[in-house]
Length: 355
Ligand SMILES: Nc1nc2c(c(=O)[nH]1)N[C@H]1C(S)=C(S)[C@@H](COP(=O)(O)O)O[C@H]1N2
Ligand SMILES: [Mo]
Image (tube, rainbow, N blue to C red; front, side, top):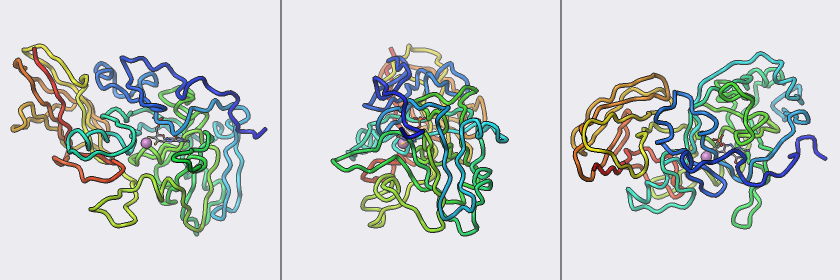
């Protein structure tokens, strides 16, 4: 048996409980309900954190697990156990993980541009505190060469088969420049061992980049002096369509977004309401504006800072149908169409009925 094979098959694609009050389940994926974050602090607890699985959560044995680092870009290939990894100097970072397809359903519902794929609203995002070893340090230990250009992290979940094609293990090349910058090989999430659904025993955390970069159930890192590719950078996670070059544009950084901590659709009672929500942007949030009438905008009050900001704004709600909007930084009115529905960065129109 391979040392890193799953010890057992889980009964469902996601292991943790998915109460309907906290999640909308889409096949092997689960989206966080925004109303479930209303009274929650800055960190999204594991119990409410979205899950995006290409297949199923594997149940890995941490004591048998190894992380292999190899390839033409390193002079000292390594094989680390979980104990080895935990013995190295660690650091803790707060970072948002957000699926490239977060907000995808709004291409269809707001822009009349149907796109295939998981019809996320805005709940394919979460902020957590991650502890682990900077990838930079592991690459140094492995003797990363000047000539190294790409790192290919690969997951230990099942091979991904779609449309009759086996694409192999979930893996996606990461440029060495990013790998040496702020990427973490994380083994804790919000102070506990990484939960099975979020990559136990270790995952990458790639701050500011689309979620696919943050490979879960990390089993190997190939470091190469020549460019590496996988279907996850050649076919998936590319912006394709009339306004892009024929080969498409690779998706790397996320775009600014904001959400109300309200059900979709929401019903509120008339009178004074305190609207609350969060705003997030890879480089930090600069400005949050809210419109309750579609014409005038008011600044919301930030309750916390950074790249994941809680905010609030009072609203005198009058009976009837309303559309609430939050704009973070320079969010546009419409998002550039791409055939796979990535990076929906436009202002979202949140329907609310006041009674
Ligand atoms: N091995 C592996 N890593 C993976 C995935 C996967 O299916 N397999 N999904 C990716 C995608 S598309 C996203 S958005 C994030 C989601 O992380 P989460 O499930 O911890 O929220 O994990 C990424 N890492
Ligand atoms: Mo994703």
